[in-house]
Image 1 (cartoon, each protein chain N blue to C red):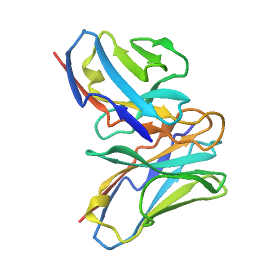
Image 2: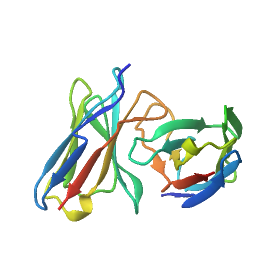
Image 3: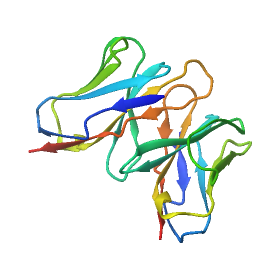
Length: 110
Length: 113
């Protein structure tokens, strides 16, 4: 069974740009969640999607958005990038209790 | 709100036993997870506690006291490869509804020879 796949692994963007990150969950998993991980704040919840619907959203500005497609693949978008958005973005899929995480996308904003 | 506390760093000797504590205050509680994360890698699932008591899985055990809002992860016969961050996470909801984990900031464990 393939794991959670995130692309790309690394990204370097300039302040003010926008970025789209992709996540393919484990086959059969309908819940996809996104987290931001930074050394100072740890893992912080961004949002969760289930069957193409956003079920829950964390405390992040509207610049952070996401969506889920009918095949459960998910994307998250960050617009008007700021230096503070530099982080590891982790996607996790679930079919019940517990997450399986992808390897993450390391975003660096310069 | 949610508040999860765990020590920032710990150091232990190869072959020894180490206990990583986690205390939590949450508005709702369903269960508690422990994840292991090696530097530069994804977190991987270690354990899940719903009921009070000790869950043992090989060299790793996890304990939960719901009344005290307290959990610990016990690692026995430490190996160098156990050097990693250990994340405590609380599941605030039950059932198959919206699913979100709240994570502590993690405990960085260094195992020394």
